Image (cartoon, rainbow, N blue to C red; front, side):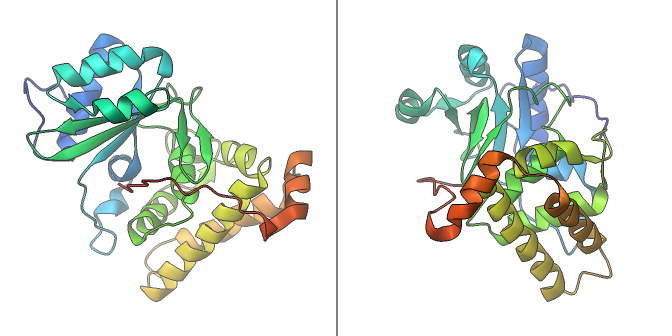
Length: 258
């Protein structure tokens, strides 16, 4: 996905969030602030099939990831772009997550700092400079696979990602298999949730009769075969012995899925 940042002279948030994220990313780029897109809008930018009639969905809000070392610069960026900070939330949770409110279009922007902490924790600190607009495809897929209480929009995003991009070395057109294995073979809880969501995605494909139209089913099966075959860490094996007797995922107070 090689796209130029769209510069905008607008002094207030744009109506379509898909246009607005370009305005945010362009302004951040000009200031040297590292923020990258997550969530459904990131899938839309990467995946042509997200616009297919059977996978189309609404895009209301947006999620981004940034660095905690640039927290003040991120706050200043959004203030200058016309956003209001959620002062109470940011005071309590600003070391790991920031909320900003768009008073023009009545929508929220979330910025995760360093880590995506939801049902599981995904370390993004070394991943935010791999691509220019979004987190890498592997991390984008992991951000969907980690949601225990997953919804249909997230499942259709998984279909779009996997249909449009084979698993491979992790260049601009492939999903980095090594990155996925790094996460899923060292943390049994991550593995268990991802396994469940792979099955949920396959069930969605069957329920909507999409297996002929999209190549996700075959790719998901081949991918999971490689996960199962890969060596697991000592910590993974020890946690696997406990299994489902102990809950392996978190339930965030608010998990708004974009």
